[in-house]
Length: 82
Image (cartoon, one colour):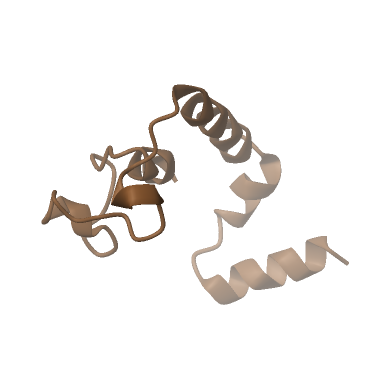
């Protein structure tokens, strides 16, 4: 989760090369952003980081993180929404 905000703002230090093409190709373009460039608004970045902190500290997220498989996580989600 730490890579999400940094990635869209051009910081790839927490990215993984299995999904981030910028690690091996720093001149790659963002296909979903204007002009192919990373986001630059510092207020937006701060707000997104605040949201991620809330998510990471959420008891529900910590509980789901205990399960290693996607199937187990889906079972937890379906039980919580019932």
